[in-house]
Length: 357
Image (cartoon, rainbow, N blue to C red):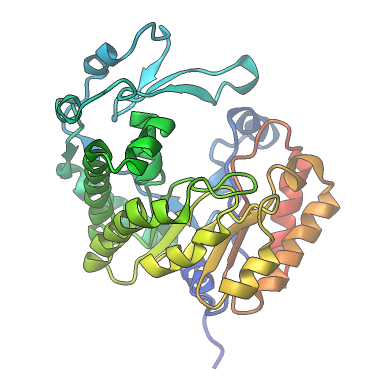
């Protein structure tokens, strides 16, 4: 008797668990101008539906109360069109050429004492939204789609966005109590959000913090292992205490090879994005492919904006062939597709995934 074909959710999860797959799923993110191009070309609004993405994000918890005005006292000369997020981080408008990018201001940048940090109006999560998360998971599963609890900028990035990168690195290197206080608060906030996603029964928990640069790691390995690794492990452990089989993604741009074993150690299942400009997928797969799956690998600094459709197709085929029949690669562009990406290259990526056998 022939086996029934897997639905999109089952296919994706089987691929991520390196248990084989029926078809290659597709995924990408479009910048605002490319979303306009999509609408003009197709007459449709939702490119995830149009291109049959296998997964959908489940909205995260909101705050019990949020008033951006309470954070303005932490800034001088704030841009009148700035927006302030739940952490009090201000985002000022970017350039006309990149309106989806913002200039970020750090509300804790000038704090000199632990007492000042303790007086900060930290957000408080509203757990009543969990029922809505459960309903979203149920609806997606009825459609045969996988669900994702997306909470990138999990610990390091959220903390330095609040404190300022240089300030927080100095705090960590000096073993300053301000670093411990802030990182512990961010970790507990992340744990609460991760536990809610796990209780809602999402299939995938998407974590991440950029810990690499173009050709080097962002900080020393000892600093990472002392301050960040155990806190990431705590977030994953707290989610897995509720849902042991949750699939954990981890995002970091750049070169992070020295940290990959650390990510395996704490329970990461899928590494994103493996930028080809920074790390070679074949090399990384040869070393870690028996313990990790991967998401990404198609360059958004190189092939997607500047390659030909044939080069896009070739890179998709090459990387899927490296992963092999068992899967282990959710092949996708490594980051947001920016305005310079030709639409024909997006179509070439989708067609290559459809054609790969």
